[in-house]
Length: 230
Image (cartoon, rainbow, N blue to C red; front, side, top):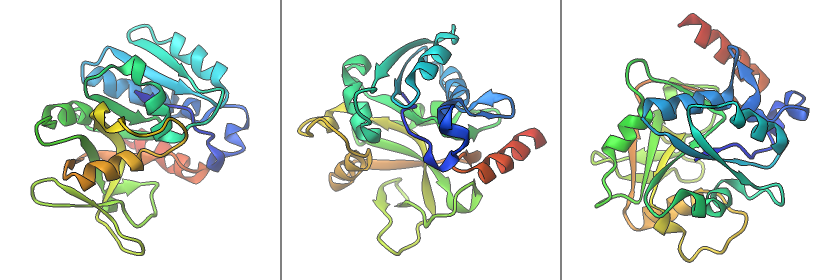
């Protein structure tokens, strides 16, 4: 699943008329970088959710001919990340699946990080696997970090007013069973992550490549330069 329903408030006025996933960086829409990760992992089917300027998202995915894309329509209410994934569960099936944020660009050189995460996934020990970016190597990020990671890959969330060495990259693999018992509606995927952590089944995989977060216009300028340098 590719998450594409957000409002993109921090990118206004660019997003006044264009949804954030369709903002172009180095000549390509942000969401198309996510589709490249799917292709690199050998994934042929995807679900894309839409809410803000949804007609444009729908029109764009119709131009993608090499992937079978189903739209999860959230025009009725913005459900945040967790609620959006939960609404799309009937389209995603009962087996573990990948979820990608469409506002980051992940560049990996010869290997694809999504494929690496799929290969690393262990259903016997994991319910959530997060691709993590070392904070010092992130572009467009100025926060305190999200997670600490043990030697075995287990994750613990950064405490308030603390600093953590890793940030969530926007790529995850999820066991849909975690949504059982959660009332439908608006909620963050952090609810799912914390549930997995409480059960000792939240794990991380370090991303060795380039991570670019398209959060602001200033970040877009930096990202554009980084991509054109390569």
